[in-house]
Length: 349
Ligand SMILES: [Ca+2]
Ligand SMILES: [Ca+2]
Ligand SMILES: [Ca+2]
Ligand SMILES: [Zn+2]
Image (cartoon, rainbow, N blue to C red; front, side, top):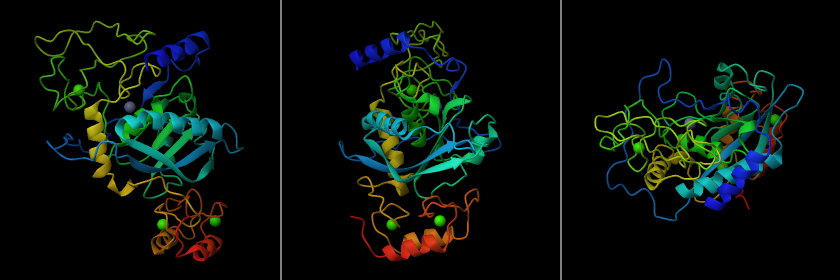
């Protein structure tokens, strides 16, 4: 990756950085949400078989694109497809791939685009979400580059800022998807600070032993060649100074420096994918045929059940399922039911 990285860095230094980029929080994902119980540490059991090497885990992902009420400022479909490709390139290190399913759900609402009020992130993630898949919302925001959910988070789903994708930031989307499979920031301190010596690596920091202790990187402590330039002393007695991994996707290093998940991060993510997120797992990318609302490549009574659960609901209602609105007129009604019934019993080809 070294030569690619150098080329990308050259690209960024010779072009104009977004003026807002420096002030924008890299990631707003937190383990301990206000008012929620502190989750117990997540430890992958010793010797657990998570999946065979090379066995890819496929995760269906429903994409929602926010625009203003006038239909402006939505991420364009080419940029969106590139963001997904970039994420999958990164996620291949985890043996995980995300599969866009269904039609893009456009949400035209000035509350969400531009997204300027933090609470709207919560409201947005409960808007038009499709059950049984990973929901990802792209919008214009300068509050953060992305926010995700752990398996234990109260509100599920990912929100990505339109300005944190593309050639200048090929890593934020993968970082947020990493959180979705319970990968923590390498600088996480919810469970205590990880010693530079690594002595407490299994129960402090990110709870992962092949990621070195990280003092929380910033653009100020990582240079353009991705070297750590800080001199923060380690947090434990006898610790040498920090020597963090500036390449790690789950750090706050420069977006162009992040190009690595470690083997133990892959083990954690695959363990979570095959256990707590097992309901999302597919053996291949779904075909997304008409009427297949749960993306299992067959139109059957399960899909009918999903449509009925959302029946009569319009966009904005908590029970509105964007996938059940087959004709995409903003309401799940008789017309959608008719389309599904006509397809009932058919496998997706
Ligand atoms: Ca660690
Ligand atoms: Ca189905
Ligand atoms: Ca409809
Ligand atoms: Zn994060």
